[in-house]
Length: 222
Image 1 (tube, helix red, strand yellow):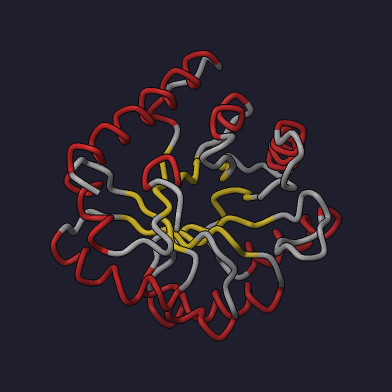
Image 2 (tube, one colour; image 1 turned 180 degrees about the vertical axis):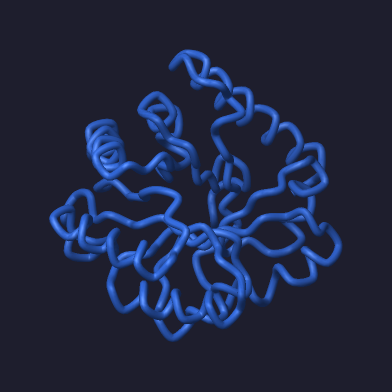
């Protein structure tokens, strides 16, 4: 992606985020844009870094490990978020690599992350992922299991920043975002990781603090 193209896409997206925030009576600075760089090579990421983007998201620990150490060496203030499912046996690597983990969804992972954080002396922010549409094929804890999982996460001293969800595909996302926002309020959580390229504006209207945008920045994956 030519650097001018990256710069204009980023500027356009930031303006749309700011407009959505102002429409909702919110401060645009309260919304963090996570550029989802999964499957994109380093060559596609560098122009966005040059354009000023500092927060990126990856789906897999192994892919992130291959791309980000060198990039972070060159640009130390980059922040990296894990937005995909995490296996418990990858907890040590995830804690070492990422500044935030958005897919905490079960007791075994809470235990593994707690141990990994204690060992590393590093505590990335954690979002509890909720299976908001109760879809069998998706990660996330059941809504009814959320209070117990939150209690476990807090007992393990995980820094719980908020909740995350991926609404059912091909359905209007707003009701699902609103439900997650209510669950966050009910459980005393401020963070909401909701909204992707097709629905980030609706997510912002409903309280998103983190939006995860890929194709609007990188173009559709081939």
